Structure formats: structure tokens, C-alpha cells
Image (cartoon, rainbow, N blue to C red; front, side, top):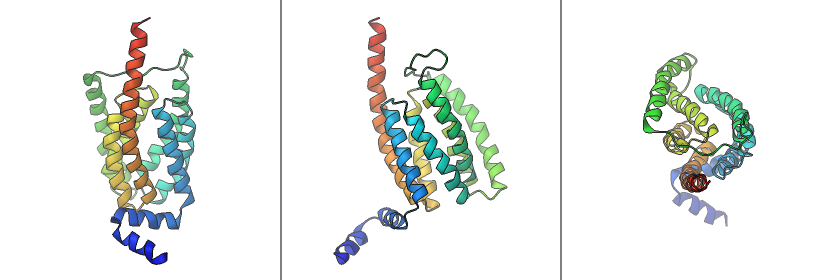
Length: 216
């Protein structure tokens, strides 16, 4: 049986071998952060408000994990996520109106405006964290700055948030791989699949929502 598993492991791509080694080492904090992060996204796809509860747990653990490997922008980002988990819960409950928030779409011009504004902060954050020994400071800053913008889009249920996540998660996968955070690398591979599901599900919800609005 042992020989079978050794031969199987030898035939697997390098990613899965390293991920399996990471599983054997079993960093429980990283594992819990990953599981709760998956639960967050799964519930977000289903437009379930409890997604923000799991987001709070995952981000609280991630702050410590990323600080330990000098991904300082990611650590700062998760402090923001922690606050947004509370704010997202509030917004999805309806904010001051007490009416559940509906999915909305932004025009391209509005997206380009906010992308331009966000891009200004990338080199500033990269330069700042570089002074403190951050690993990949500018790439880290890119994912962090645009993740801030995208999380705000999620809180306001802007449909196009999923397209932003496709880019951010792809870059983050490479970043975590380089820092040997194999659980997080695997998590973001799962995220990419779930993002595609999110696009499909939210598109259906938006169409139903539009139909209901038109009939009233």
C-alpha cells in the first residue's frame, strides 16, 4: 500500500505533490482559514448573508498568517476585510432601509473611473511596504488595492465584482505559490472555479430580479 501511494505521488504534477506535503505538515490555522474562506464564497454565490460571518473568521486568521510570511499588503488587506465583513452584513440586510440589497450592474465608464483611482494607490502601497521588507511589494500591492475595491463591490452587490476576482485570484495564486502557502494556493484554484459559478448564479438571479421588477 505504501509503495502504491509513493508511485501515485510520483506521477502527480508538482503542485499536487507540494500541496499534499503541506497537508501532511497540517498548519491548522491556515486550514481553518481556507475552509471558512470557501464557505464564505459558497454562501456569497448563493446570496446568503451568513457568508459575512465566515468571512470574518477567515480574515481574522489570515491577518496573522500573512504577517508571518511578510506579505504585509495582504495582512493589511485582511484587516480591511475584517471591517468589511461587518459592513457587508449590514448592507446585505438592507442598511438603513431594511430592504435586502438587490444585484446591480455598473456602466463601463464607472468601472474605468474606479479602476483608475485604485491604480494610483498601487505604487504608493508597494513603495511603503517595500521599506518594511515585504515580499513582492508591488504585485502584493496590486492584489490588495484591487481586492479592496472589489470587496466594496461585493458589499453593494455589484454584479461585475466576479470579473475583478478572476484577475485578482489568478495573481494571488502565483503569489501564494511563491511563498509556499500551498493551502492558500489550492484555495485560490478553488476560488477561480467558484467565481465562474458565481457569474452564472448571479446572472440568473439578476435576470429573475429584472423580470420581477418589470412585472410590478
